[in-house]
Length: 150
Image (cartoon, rainbow, N blue to C red; front, side, top):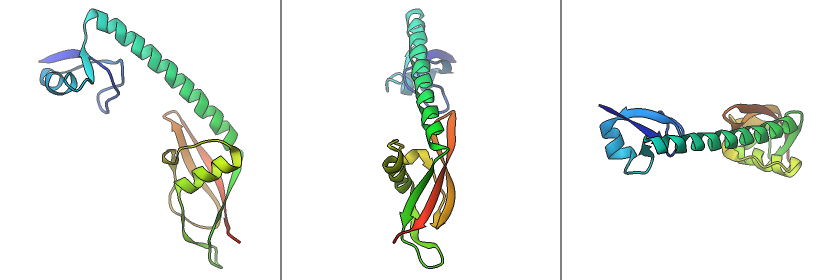
């Protein structure tokens, strides 16, 4: 047996806020409804869900525009990071996502959360590329120039 519900929050594998989904009766009764993640889909609630989806879509569009603007500003730039390195250009440690976020903020006045930067181990000087994902639809490369600290 299943029941139609309206999600009040984003849930992985089920849907996003405002979506009308059909779930097992027990899952709705024992988990989703008591935790406040969903409400039963009545006529009035369906109208409310439409408003939730509209607000979500507007926020999503605004976030996508902001992420696109940041991407267009950062893609042509080269961010310089100074790190302690040996004579052959190997770093004493590695460059982290937090180091990259700090360097971007210092050199461009653009705030990027370190969790949005996907960086593998950068352990040598030279030019490297990392990927920043500021929105589910907006991922872009950031070019880094890692130089040995004086």
